[in-house]
Image (cartoon, rainbow, N blue to C red; front, top):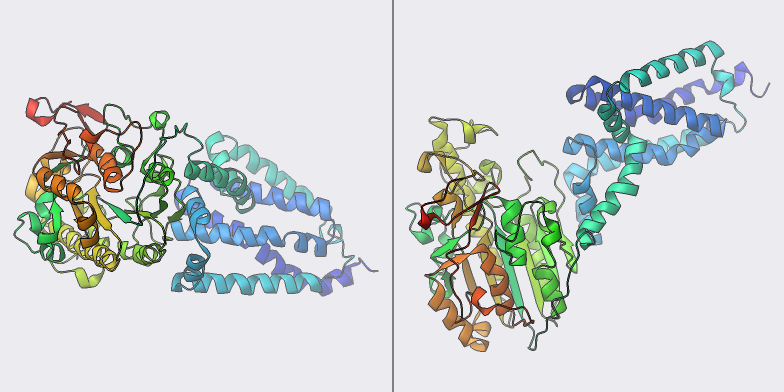
Length: 554
């Protein structure tokens, strides 16, 4: 008997191993969900996985066809489950942005990382074993011959009851379906990935052409956006600790703005304002319909090759329809609820590649993680210069008492590391022979409990150190020689109040870009600059009058 019991028994060890492999991804997801998710969601993952198996078995009919046909589901399930364990949540837009923006050379480097090699090796071994054992199965071995009717009825009844239970919580049911490896992967491919692509390309926004143009030679302009940077913690501005030794040594060749002020104390406001030139009054949280273009769009129209290097939540810059020629977003293995843990130095190889693309004008944007909490995770051990990180955790910023000394120490270490990083950017750019600039402007500042009596940023009130920020412009000798007027204007304006929404016009001015809507009064590299002291600030998403008016509370 070809499909009889002896034949089935001879294949039973193979079937057991293949069955265990096939169920491994959903089992991993169920185990993950059991530790952090509600019971209906856990049950929904199990029901969805079981339904997929039953459906595939009913269509393919034989064990060989079932396992061979299930190989793609097994592979994507392994990747889905591995990513979930690595990131602590099922694949979403962050992974989609990485998939859409990672170059071949970055993929090669990614696969060579220690964190990647072991899972990749395990997947290759499991896939090879799965394929080998599937091919060992006899072609005509029917699935029904190994499943007794009573067993089938019990499985069906259990699945039905589990479905009813998971359906008692519709939201958990939907989340469970999305967390099942096969359906979750399908959702990622047909929904999440296209949605992320639309966001990256700015197709969700109605962009209006600037009609920009530029006449001139090859130049390179770099904009570095910092994170949570308070001016009073930089030694170059008078802080007693030596937190900015590299920048201190460059005092004579950098224009340090003395009264730079962030327009908002939240990144989701300040970065879009910086990249579009909109004022806080023009921009409101989530109102992307008001955005009709950004600095990258302007530069591309004017003939610049553009690139964007980000060590930040990619949704921040992509919310303005960021669509550079190259977007570099290094993979992150240890992200937490308070941000990425990858160090900013991971952006330097990408910067060096962009600087080496000679022959045409280039605009390079860099978005740092900088001094974002958790401070003690933002720098490598060799930058642990002040104090000790022992005892610090995610909640330390909110914990009163002696721990705040270590919080301040760890913040100062982030400044020391950022100083080194900015020094690397400047010295790399210095090697160019064409005119070049490096502009640094943070998104907002930061309050420190020990120094200010309050912590962090984003409160719905104006606090000095959450808004007062350091900022600078560095120019190489070639740029100073080619544009003496802009050098003079910068020198004349460094002591004036300069706001985040002035960066857009200033970068365009430095790059020599003209367009019908240009406003020279909004460029602090222009002798027509007018300080905007009347525009409101955005504190925690609330518009406030300038503090000088005395009306800076909600």
